[in-house]
Structure formats: structure tokens, C-alpha cells
Amino acid sequence: GLNMKKVTKAVIPAAGFGTRFLPFTKAMPKEMLPIVDTPTIEYIVREAMESGITEFLIIINEGKECIKTHFGRNEVLEKFLKSKNKDNELKIIEELPNKIKVSFTYQHEQLGLGHAVLCAKEFVNNEPFVLLLGDDVYVGNNKPATLQLLEAFDKTNSSILGTLEVPLDDVSKYGICEPAIKTNDRLVKLKSVIEKPKKENAPSNLAIGGRYILTPQIFKYLETQTKGAGGEIQLTDSILRLMAEEDVYSLTIDGTRYDIGSKKGFLKATIDFALNREDLCEDMKNILASYKNK
Ligand code: G1P
Image 1 (cartoon, rainbow, N blue to C red):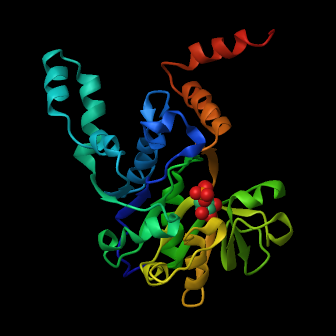
Image 2 (cartoon, protein in one colour):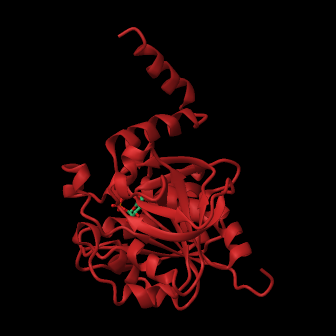
């Protein structure tokens, strides 16, 4: 739109216990699980950065301070790399601190995603913002997933949920959207959303895929949100209440999603990302080929 303020801020909740990835997550945040050589959360930050986002808030809990270390400067390491003329390595670790600002806040009690997002209220400061969940890594076709959402936001000026179509047997793992009209358009106005419905109660197979653009009106509802599915304060429930006040849309993201929270998704990401790397593609192909006759 013409007079609209550009979206510059992103929020990334990373305060869960990661129980699905024990024992790794006993001492290490699951957001630091490496895909090839890069922590999962860095791919997510880069997706938003490549979409024009410059300010980040990462919501952590006690014990996850290594995420802070990862996004900060490391002057000792920088000095060492300089002295050894390791210019490439230096470039890799200096890029993010040079381009973006990352701040942190704590969620002290794990009460649910809605409660985690409420911890971002001050940072967001009454502007629309991007919300990226740490389990979902996207490789966008042509454009990063976040940029696809931001371009749609330019048209609608309303909250938008990034979605994917899932098999009916999987709807109970997601927030599910009910489109207001039947259409083949990727961008559609929503009538309702429901968190983790049973298959029989699902209004569609259009699942929320861990990417959102939200208007700051969401905080009004998060502040009074009662517990929902799984006894947690659910973001989806507040989005449903927001719909009474404002339009909310969904946009089917054009790209591949990896569910890093599942072991299968994590393993597949490792293989696919290695295949997409010039320095590793041949090696990974040879490894995969060596399994063929086993
Ligand atoms: C969260 C959201 C859900 C969404 C999902 C996507 O659930 O509550 O609406 O579909 O992320 O990954 P979680 O997977 O944290 O239980």
C-alpha cells in the first residue's frame, strides 16, 4: 500500500524445552541443531533478513544463552581468524552482526506459544511484525517464504498466516484455517482458525506453517487469552478473536518446508541442504548411492 509503514521487525520464539529431541536438548537448545554446518535458527534469521527484516527479537528461557552468543560478536575469534588470514571464515561470522540487530527476552514460564508471543509486546511497539517459528525451515521457490508474506501484506494490510496443505491424517498437529470462500488463489481471507482439531472437526487441510505477519492488535487478545488445546495459551485462539475486529488472510507458501522438530524432517533437511551445497553435493550423492544395494 502507499502510506504503509514498512515491516522491519521479526519475533522468533525459542523458549521451548525441545522434549522431542532429548537427549540433545538436555544441554543444547534445539534451535542450535546444525543443518550441515549452520544452526537451524540462523537459517530462519537469514530467511527474514533476505526478506528485508533488520530487527529481531528472540524469546529464550534460562539455559539457552548460547543462542545469544551465536548472534553476538566474538572478538577473540575474529582476531584469531584475521591473524591466520582466514578471510572466508571471518566473513561468515561477521555478516549477521553487521547487517541486523538481534535482541533477546526471556519467557520464564512455558505457558504456550501465545504467551511467548506476548513477551514481544514491548519490542513490537505497535507495528505489524513477522513471527517465525523455530521448527519450520523453508526453502522458497524464487522468493523466501517471509518475502512472499510481506508482498501479500502490502496488498491486504491485514494479518496473514503462511500455510501449507497437509494430509488429512496430520491436521491434528497444526493450527487449521477455514477459508471464507472456495478459491484456488494462494491468498484467501479466512473465516476461522482452530488449533490442533481432530480430523472430524477440521474445516480444511490448510495448516499454519510457522510463519505469520501479525498486526499489533493481536496483543490485546493475547493479554486476556485463556488456555486452549493441550492446556496451553494458544496464539491460534487469539488470532480467531482478532478476526472479529480485522480481516485475517492465509497465503499458501510457495516452497519446501522442513519440520525440524521431527527427526525425519531434520534428517531430510540435512541431506537436501548438503545436496544443494556446491562443496558437498558430490560427496552426499556418493554417500546416498552407496546405500542403494544394501
Ligand atoms: C505451532 C502452532 C500451530 C502451527 C505449528 C506449525 O504448534 O500452534 O498452529 O500449525 O506451530 O509448526 P506446535 O508445533 O508448536 O505445537
